[in-house]
Length: 188
Image (cartoon, rainbow, N blue to C red; front, top):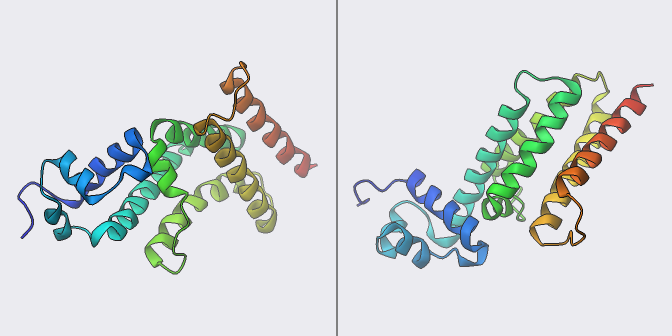
């Protein structure tokens, strides 16, 4: 019987806080139960063991990232939308390093929930790029490039790979501006 006051949203929020603060490797049912002040077996009423928890946390992270991305582009078009999307993505990765890492893990692409959540995220930049009037195939290439830029920057930053004492935000801005210049070159 599920414990009163304990639900999947509470569990996922606590798990996200745990991985953001301590890293992915710390996520066990025991550490999560300790954080929640419950016994580990109580979690089995809500998740199918650690693999089920990881799947649910991945879906939770994808959902949160998608919401942030959609909110960033709402009411914006073209360069403003792409710029807002890129900054929102990086800010999510900075604020939620563990949860962000969960969204980037190798996933079971046959899982329809994962497909839907990943598709919802991919739809955001595709829709933003539609404003440029580019053909669908070129838009897909550009979405892949944008994702590579955003994820690459966020991942290198999280791993401490940018060691030179130069402002990272300026580097990110230059990268996004260069990407936008590439889009404009395609329009000529």
